[in-house]
Length: 107
Image 1 (cartoon, helix red, strand yellow):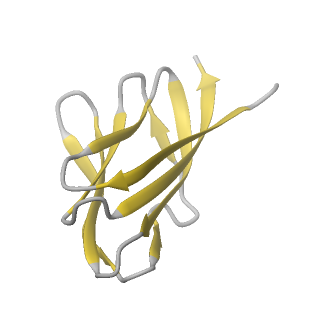
Image 2 (cartoon, one colour):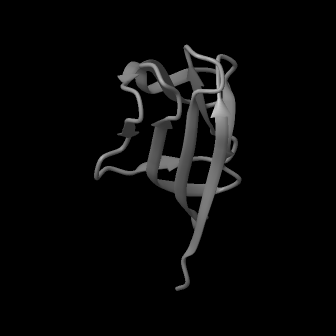
């Protein structure tokens, strides 16, 4: 069976939450990488909204100047249709994000 690998990106994420990825089926998130692109330390939240609740994967996590955060490490997350992965920072235009997924893993 062929796998449908997808990537989603966001540049200059700031103080308003940005939806980087919204699941359209049963998808597996295999990587979330966020980078501080500013000259100061920042705090970052990464969470999934399931339609009713925000479920934080990381909350107010500090990222130093020029640093990066691998949110999942070696873990994976199964997302259902409609689940939205969001990122927000405490600093304007401070985060670049890369999300890797396997789309449509089952029905």
